[in-house]
Image (tube, rainbow, N blue to C red; front, side, top):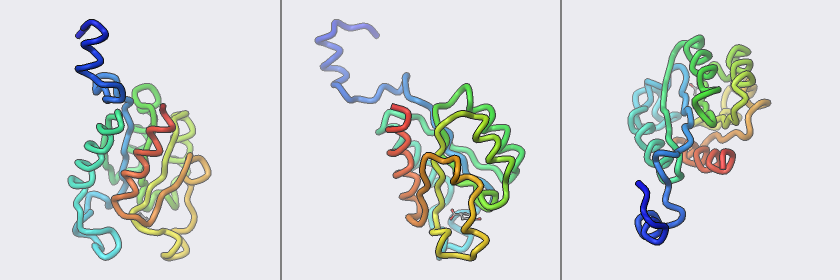
Length: 165
Ligand code: DHK
């Protein structure tokens, strides 16, 4: 709505995020992350994916972003969503799960998206089995956050807000 600017300043003090203009961020979780809360809780925590997504939506809104949270166990579906994000989203926060360590297809799709990418892992992948130490995502990511559980997604959203500012 158009108010005189002195009223606008009262209604929407400077710095208040405008949800209508929020940059859309794809927050994409890969295989087995739908099992959060049940799966190896000593490694991945007790929060469910719904808990995690709700926290992302809330955090994003505070930063003036819109979190579009999705999860898939299917590599091709993730590729299709990443391709689609090219025209509809401003950035991608990705926990590709085990595909992190195997997927050239996700690597290529992320490059094709031409969007800033932040790689997230709940666990510290470098403190685990050696097959988890290599990532096909890291070389093309703006940054990587791992080992801080769900806090990693909060940190990634903060970093993404700066990337898309
Ligand atoms: C999640 C997975 O499912 C694993 O395959 C990765 C990652 C680590 C995580 O820590 O969030 O190796």
